[in-house]
Length: 161
Image 1 (spheres, rainbow, N blue to C red):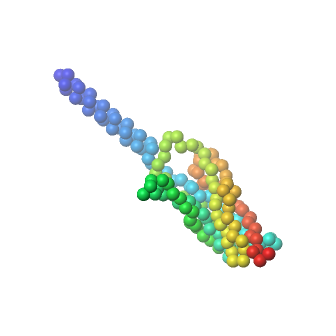
Image 2: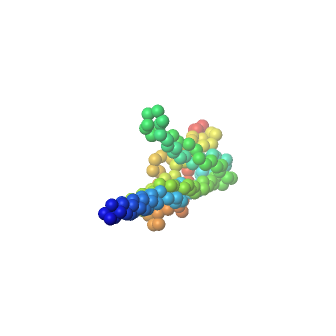
Image 3: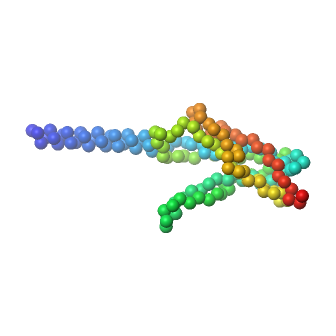
């Protein structure tokens, strides 16, 4: 009788552990839409305040990967979204989103949103944002950079001067 009881007890413990394992897995790994790049809508003007048409505005993002040979993390910048300014010097970079599959219960309920971009036009010095130049802190409901918009007015310097 005790061997049957011991066998049943062992089986129940395995079922409980399996259930807890599945529960923990669901808690940590679940799909959730995370906005990771804010909207940027601004104007590009010259040193006299006149709009610059057809300037190229590119969103700059960072790509990360693990070096297979040595095991360390590498990264590089790339232009993920490129637009041209209109006749008023205006441009718009859309809000971007992705699916993030790994979360922890310790995820903090706030986010720092940054906007990194570059503006170039023949005859003018290329403008590139500096780290933290366009940055915002968001807390309520925390969908990272959702509904964050930066509205810069950038002055390009003529290289002929």
